[in-house]
Length: 125
Image 1 (cartoon, rainbow, N blue to C red):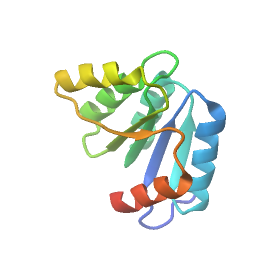
Image 2: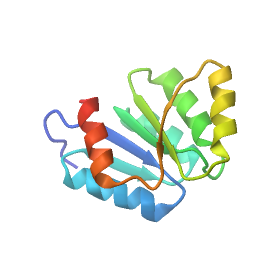
Image 3: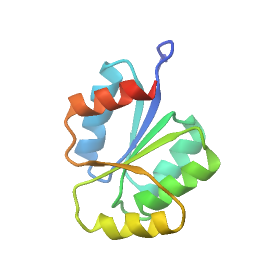
Image 4: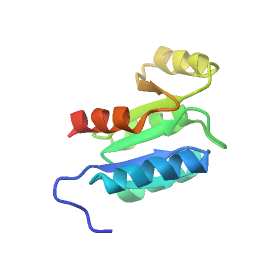
């Protein structure tokens, strides 16, 4: 894939493949370099390979949680902007525990409208 000049590299991690693939498609057609993965382990692996500018990660993933992915990426790639998203109320406890450990992540509600996501990413440039 040819990276457009100045485009952000975005990694999307969601175990719901249709959501991850749809967001990646929308971002790729909007001038971003986006990649979709479907598990926490794949997100950690892809983040080390592609060094994303932005990680958009579901909180609840198969395997390691999105919060654990976010913590790992924040520690190894501190320049990466991390955004968690979730449609489950149970994620509040996970986020509270992460904050208690000194980690703060932005969270967006799922489902996210593509226009909202594009507006958010435009502010990350």
